[in-house]
Image (cartoon, rainbow, N blue to C red; front, side, top):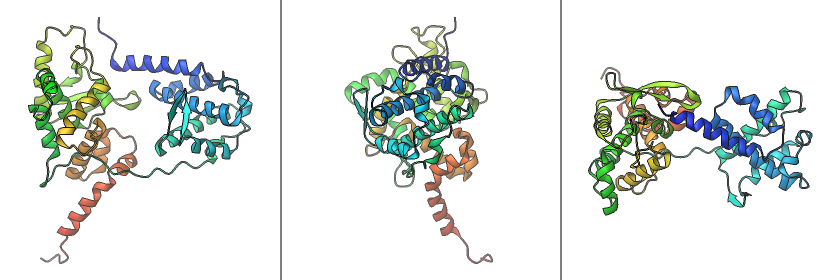
Length: 352
């Protein structure tokens, strides 16, 4: 019998975790989750649950101090003013929940305010709240960060160095080198796939064997929101994948009903944590001063594609961005080299 897919398991896991959190919140919160379920993923709802748990914990500690979070009534939320939400955003800079100290980034604060806007909107549309008060609060300003990526130019070739490290095992510790004998071909396929397609880590972990089509050098991924998309890869990626598929197919330890493409040493679907660790391991050899993660390899792909095509819409499509402005925001810095190059090659006299 075929096992449940990675995404089915993730959906179940997120739903169960959300349900546990909702039990600790006021009774009416469950109505919100039922209402948004048809148009949200289980992962989105889990993030909503985390955000609302923090918000009601804040209200219990700082606003309605005589009440536990689950005792706060819907009518109490109508009493909140914009200043209360501004206080909440300030509180998020340094707060404590479940005995653990936390702090939110600007983007984290923005996400929590978006959650509260959606939460209030649901009850406002049901005429159970008189206003969507969080909409009266300005979103935190998110300062753009420098894109961290592997560079490949005439001065240095960090991409080539990383591929060499993963293929050869050079630079690994003695213990790592022992593991590399068993995982090197798999790791090469993973790193090459990241650099050659810009795939997300959740998409890579969720790949099954039958998602790969070597006839068209393509594979099917499940994007954010559950949409399926076809991505294409070049011959270099095809070779790395086919080399790995050969040893995976020949392994006597892999159960026939195991559909996962990338496997751990225990012959189970590789986890996101394991992928993060293997990327970190090889990146430290190729670029020790940069903190390279799977997402940074995705940025490396986006950067290279933008430089080669100059077409932000192609980059957005390949990366699976629904809004091209998201892509522009992340890759605007790359335009500087393109502008510099254009200026240097500009011919002021068209006759020459």
